[in-house]
Length: 280
Image (cartoon, one colour):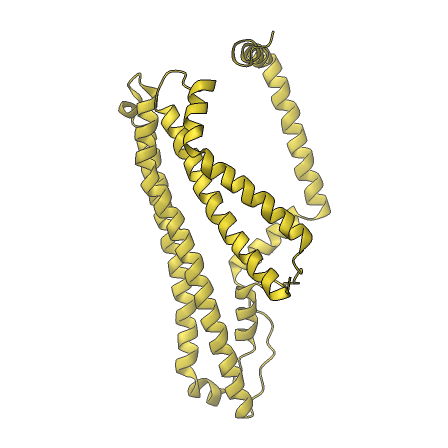
C-alpha cells in the first residue's frame, strides 16, 4: 500500500471511529437515563439486556472498527512528528517588547498599528472577564437553586434530580460554550496580533530602524504569580506541602476512629457485600 493510501485510510478510520464513539456513548447514556426513569430498582439483568439490545449495533460496530483500526495502525504505524508547542501570549509579549517604540519617528508613523495591538489585548482581557462574570452568575444561580428547601421537599428523589438537572443544564452548557468561544477568540486574536507585529518588524527593517532590546516587562500579578510558583514548587516548598498533607491525613484518620466513623464504614461495606453483590 502506498504512503498516500495509508494516510487516507488512516484518516477515514479515525473519522469513523470518532463518529461511532460519540454515537455509542450518547446511546449508552440515553439508555441509562431511560432505565433510571423506570424508578424503583430497575438495574437488573433482564432490563439491562433489553435496553442494551436496542443499541447493540452501535456498540459492536464501534468495537469492530476499534479492532480494525488497531490492527491497521500496528501494520502501518504512523510517523511521529515532533511538534514544538509555544505559548502564544509569551511569544507576542516578547515580540512587542522588541518593537522600537522609543524611536519617536517610528512610533508616530505606526501609531495606528500600535493602537490596534493594544486594542486586541484589551479585547482579549474583556472577553475573559465577561466569561468569568458569566460563570460566576451561573454558579450563583445553581447555588440559589440548591439553597431553596422547597426544591427538595418531596419524597420523589428521581423527579427532584431530574428537575435539578434541567435547572442546571442551561447554565453548565452556557459556561462551557463561553469558555470554548473565549479560547477560540484568544487564539485567533493572538495569531492576528503576532502577524501584525511581524509586519511592523519588516517595515522597521526596511526603514533602517533596529529592533529595541528592552528588559521584559512584567505586571504585578505576573510577579506575584512567579513568586508563589517558585515558593510552592521549590524543593523546600514541596516537602512542606507533602508533610502538611500527610499530617492532615493522619489527623483525619484519628478523628474518624475517635468518633466511630470507622465502624460506620465497616458496616456499610458489609451491607454492600451481603445485599448488593451477594457475598457473605
